Image (cartoon, rainbow, N blue to C red; front, side, top):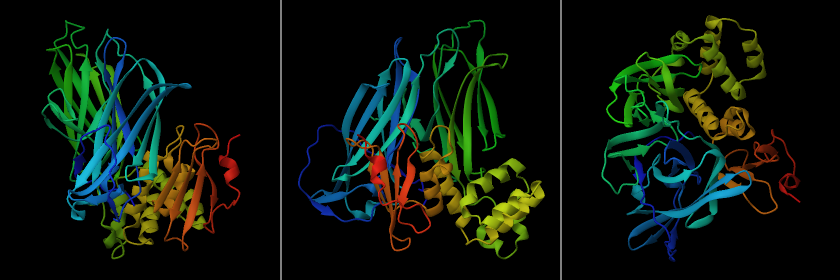
Length: 455
């Protein structure tokens, strides 16, 4: 199931806390999951300031009871490597305390932030999270990190940071910077009730003293690269650097993946520097209500009346796992927006009410979490399983064990009486490949451990 986005809870970062013996409380929980993103800002003359944001579901933690209520926490470790050398390591504890179980809500994420200064180069960044009260529950995320020094001979723009809110802040908050409190949206998911807040920094604004103004252009592009929001605002060159804050309403955007871009333009409106970031909108109220499709199938056609053929082709590519062989063959023979629009409307009309929204949310999550080496997440083995069967009930991750390649075991309790999927990173830095499953329609190899063991 796609994670809904609810209110964010901020945990103060605390190091060196000891564990105390408590009675463990059995609570319904999500899988232990960690999400991370980074933004790069100007540092000193030799380094770039890298801000690492992370989040994890509140329900994914194990709670213990004492006189103060329910206590949980996460051990976090950040490792930065350059080639085979470790250049940065940090670890700390994020504590979390609740009064009782009524405060454990669905869709509530704990959010935190860490920062480091790195010199120019190509790095690999890894974050490892362990449940403080159950160390067997772990998750990790790994991503490439390229650091380039900001130029000094022209205007430069930092990375754009997505946020759920930006407001005047007070020093002491972990999210405080430049007089503002910026609460990051690490997963990049926004619902129809939210606004997408943006934070960026512009540098070297006084390099060209002949020009008194510059422009900030913000654009939003849909999945096929069509610009759907564009606005341009003039700004005066008053200081050497400036904070740029903006926000966009997503209430009129249908559910889907979008790309946000921000650019600095000179007085002639030439792009001097730009930055971008992808985000996802979940907006179930736009389009036709699925409950109406069974009453009048012609209503569904209006949903595709404004879509172009590449958008329809992309949607059918996403739902390929839900289509029958006859449906796949039929779609391949279609040409033009009218025939494809009718096909897709009928395709979803034959499915259970609400499946379309649920399925496309799975695709969005797979594309975000399992993209590898430029390959769309839903096309990878983990992304395909996630899209087809939904999130597993249990994740068993083994990212860095001795004499073993990274591997994961996913367990689904409600499918065929209980099934597992085993994924192994058979090539270093590559994708996790499906090597074994107990699902009757999937690959089966009881000797799958040979793919994980290294000599």
